[in-house]
Image (cartoon, rainbow, N blue to C red; front, side, top):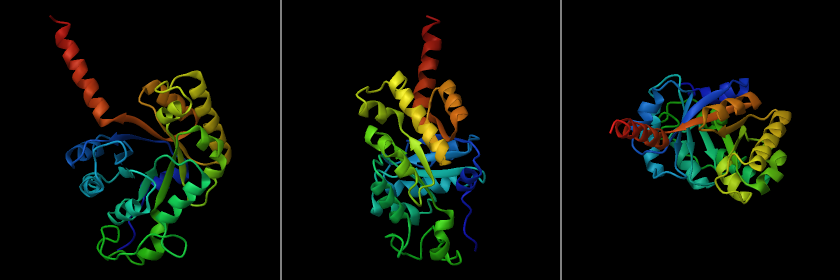
Length: 257
C-alpha cells in the first residue's frame, strides 16, 4: 500500500488558499458533519476544547470519509508524547500552539521526525502505517507530514523570521487573540496596534515565501487576510456557529412578541 497523500500539504506547497473550520465539540458526529460541509479542512482542537487525545482517532476517521477534506490536529501543547500518539493515529498535519522561539520550533520538528533526525518513537501496528500495510513508512513518513506552528505572542513575533526559517516548519499560523493579550490589549483583535502587528507578520512571511494562516471569524476580515496572503484561513468554529444560530433563532421569536 502506498503512503496516504496529504492533500493539505500539497495545496500548501502550491500556494493555494484553503479555508477551514475549527472542531471543538468532541465525538465523531460533529467532525463528520463539518467534513461534509464543503470546506478544505477541519481542525480537531485539543488545546482549548474538551477533546482528549484518545478522542482524536474517531474524529480523524469521521473526517477521513470525505475524499477532498483534510484533517488537521492541534495538540494541547508542544509535547513529543502527544505528537507521537497523534501521528500514530494517522494525523498528517499538526498545528502546534504557542511557539515562541526558533528553539521551540526545532523541538516540534524533532518530535515529528524519526531518528536520527528526531525523537518520534517507532511503532509498526498503527493507523498511520495502515496497520503495517504502507510500504517503507518509516523512511517515507516525513514526505506527507506537515507542521504548522502557531505564533501568538510579542516575543514570538520578534523571532518570527527565525521561527519561519526553521527546517521542517511548513507554515506559520498567527493567533490574534493571544497576541492581543500579549500586547496588553486583551480581546481587542481589531485594535490598530494588533492589526498592524498581524499585517507586519504577513509581510515578513510573504517575503520569506513561508505559508501564512490566521483565524478570522468575521467574513470581511477573513477576505482581507486572504488578500494579504493567508493560505490557511479558519473562518468558523463549531460552537460559535451553534451559539450564533441559536441566538438568531431566539431573536426571531422574541421580535415577534
